[in-house]
Length: 276
Ligand code: FPP
Image 1 (spheres, helix red, strand yellow):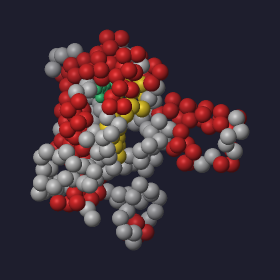
Image 2: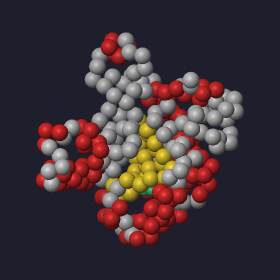
Image 3: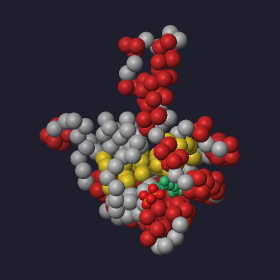
Image 4: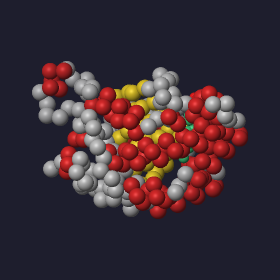
């Protein structure tokens, strides 16, 4: 059955979800075709602050509130994975004070209620070794503490670059071949998937970028091969649950063909939500 179709009443959104406090009005969304994985490039924090005559770091601070809001909304909609591009490898080139401000926001982000109240598990992807010891400790601690939650998995990409991730994959696979653990002809797409930092999640059905730029910026290059892309002008601090629902509605209005023809897809049962 599809219990989340009954979410207009006070029922949980899906079988996994027991801690729902408020009913979610489905509005015009098809609750049977909510993306399992939404990836977001959270852009526009700096401009949001500059427009108000504030230091850029205030934009990041406000951006954290958006992270809480969107995490809660995704959890209530029944999304299983939310991957947020928080700090790229290239962001290490920003002024030291801005890097420090972002890392402090990460450290102070973890109020337990967000995770306990919404059944949210926390994970990180990226180059763990480049993070400070305090950030590393906090992340490991939060990953452990929330590992029992099985609603939404909130994945924060920190010191992340897709090209670096893929380079690491190449190195690991080469090493396994060298060690005689893997034969060259046994390397498949699945082998690549298994070695990615994202190896425990499905590919994103939907990638959202806020802030008006039309770029991917080295985010999840392999994983978004068939993702629907959604760009909006809204700066991340202004991105609301309503904006999220608009993005999902837009996604639901598209036909995902995975290289097939329209006629082929229409002959199939449920083309939209099949992840290949
Ligand atoms: C992009 O906006 C945003 C970032 C580089 C940082 C994102 C960080 C946060 C939202 C805070 C920490 C998050 C968590 C999960 C605790 P930009 O600064 O590039 O904006 P601009 O293009 O307007 O300059």
